[in-house]
Length: 224
Image (cartoon, rainbow, N blue to C red; front, side):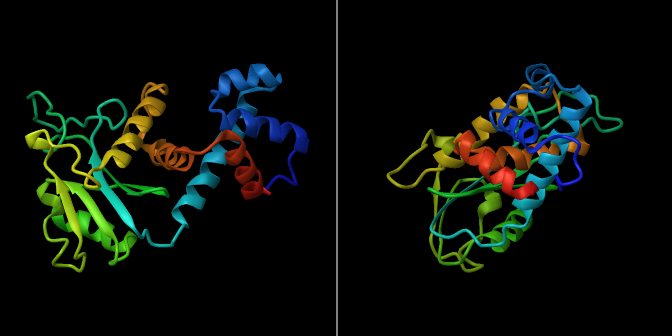
């Protein structure tokens, strides 16, 4: 991937370091005295590589698993439907694009853009990504009904509607922390087009709770 590049390995590693510290492309171009188009090219190449890497991870999640969906208005943009003139609602029932997340405590996070948050949709994602022996924690959304019926014998909920956010080990603080990180990080782009949103989502998934040096080492190995 880098053998035909006109840039030296030293320069490429410098671009990787800036990317992994999350420095915007415009500032990276100034810091490294490189053309902005060159930085844009490498940043997009990194995102495509990370996307492929994250989507190729096939090992199922196991252990204590938190599941949750997000519709955060700061980066999951609202969609107007023709003939609809009312005020868009927030959260479930909104016209916004939902994104579903799975968090393995002390481990990985997985995100997926979904068409809706109905029971069938969420079950298909969970069955495909989470081992049956896992313990699943969720909130009280009806889309999580029936998990016991499909083989997940240990499913516990917190009732956010009743202001219950933790009951011992029963909480979804981990995946909610990820959504907060995702919101803060993606908000700085001031809107991301549908074409590139999935790349940024997978990049954020890849970055979460990891140090820049660790990310830089992995990214260098991925593009070689």
